[in-house]
Length: 370
Image (cartoon, rainbow, N blue to C red):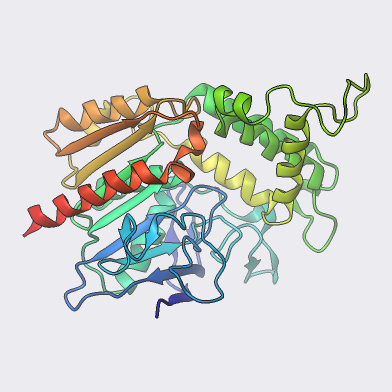
């Protein structure tokens, strides 16, 4: 019978962050699916997008709710748990079991709030590497993720070239553009303008629901495409036959965004929203002045890059620039641009195409390893 192994581990050894600050202790929440083979060579690490968590799949276990990548992880699926030992850990800075701003600061006995250090994508990967080492895995068969998870999947073979055989980077980029930063800044300002945010010290008090809901509404617009919004909503009205000529909800898209915003505040921490969006905005493999081809020159892993035609948040040209930099270093890189109307969220929706591509890719990686 399929099972999920859900665990938390506390690392007492300080984690050195990119900022130069040491963080200790650090708790990591993670789940595993499938069985690690005797030589520990079938491990696949799944890295999640910024509002995700460690629960990527139910793996068919009785009574388990579906995971955020349910259609991709499990028996016979893209990441086949009959073949692979799949690991998904909650990322550093989140609010789903791994240490973040809502965690208790051992030095004060209170939640960190804004006393939590600013983190980067590289810091997330460094903590994931510590988990993989703890599990006794010398080399990952693959690391894979979409969006912020794709950034982590990209950093892995750069930071730890001897520790990963292949990497799948989906709907991601090597650095955030001004527009990507701008959308995040609007969201952050919405959170911080909420009077209930209280400079991040709201734990045990009222939650800054309005600000966080608006931030989510803005974000959700960027995850969809114009075509998908038109197909789903168009100009359909909300349970009425005519415009109300007021500021109440008229259009279905308004109600949808409000629902998305308010449901988000019940499952996510406002400070984690600030920290994780900032981590993505800081992400720049070139550090502003290096050539991308030089940055990826040490990559030894086989790479698969996937983008989506209607993704205007992480457009395909960003993936293509990464592909060219890898090719310039003779890295074995495959690139697939999938045609879809779903926008950035396609990596959470377009399962059939992704499954076919990823299954075949992993078969090739295993074959070439032998």
